[in-house]
Image (tube, rainbow, N blue to C red):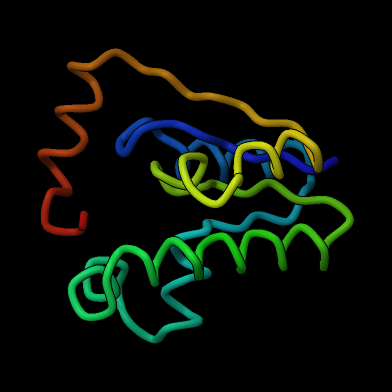
Length: 119
């Protein structure tokens, strides 16, 4: 089973991704963590120093590599992941996509708590 969790920043993708991956005994990947490990810097720093185009190309490349290298997984994608490089089509063709959609007040409260970590 290949599952891609989608949603806006603050939707709970990382939290629920860990929970669901453990429940279904799937390898878990947080795409932002994979990107940070590959680049050796936080996502916000990648945006600031290398730009969004660089980030989105890397994001697409690493997502596709994870999908190719693993028979099963749950990936928590970044909030903008489905919007670039035909990534939404790729995810729909290669697994199940799940959209997390909490209320706007819930997402605002979550983002205000973690504002310093967001690009």
